[in-house]
Figure 1: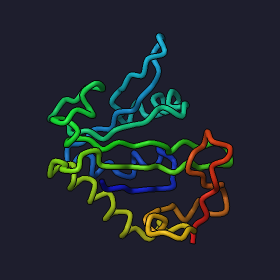
Figure 2 (figure 1 turned 90 degrees about the vertical axis):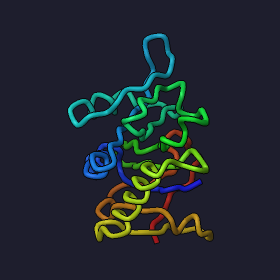
Figure 3 (figure 1 turned 180 degrees about the vertical axis):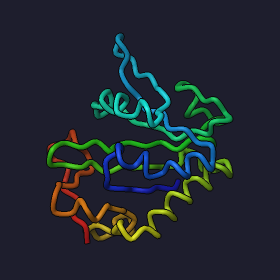
Figure 4 (figure 1 turned 180 degrees about the horizontal axis):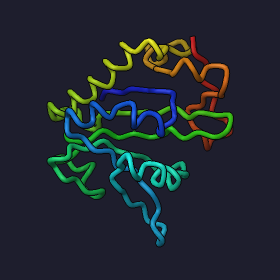
Length: 173
């Protein structure tokens, strides 16, 4: 499985990857709780993003990047024939003084070519953007694969999990 970890708010990440979303015909779906407290999913657009994010306030909620052509519903995302067209995401929430990292992972071990290309395009964009730093403190290769927006360093605390008080702070290299 492939992973990307980015320390920036989801409210900024979504507009940041608009070009890639359009180019690869990918849509972002954000989970929320309905009135019966069941997890539902709604496609995010530039017009409804802020409304969607206001409902994205629980540790069990995530988001997905889905191939538009497949018309994948919530109950199909992890099924073998559909997971090849999906990327799972979590995090990206923020408070006044804290940012939660965004974790993206390709669900399938054998993803569709378009999903794989979209994922690679995000990684390439982050690698080539001088506004992003790469690597956080820690002793493994995993820590070298974190991206963070340099402009947030010193202004907010970086956490891996906003809802876990014991989650360690993430410190850029």
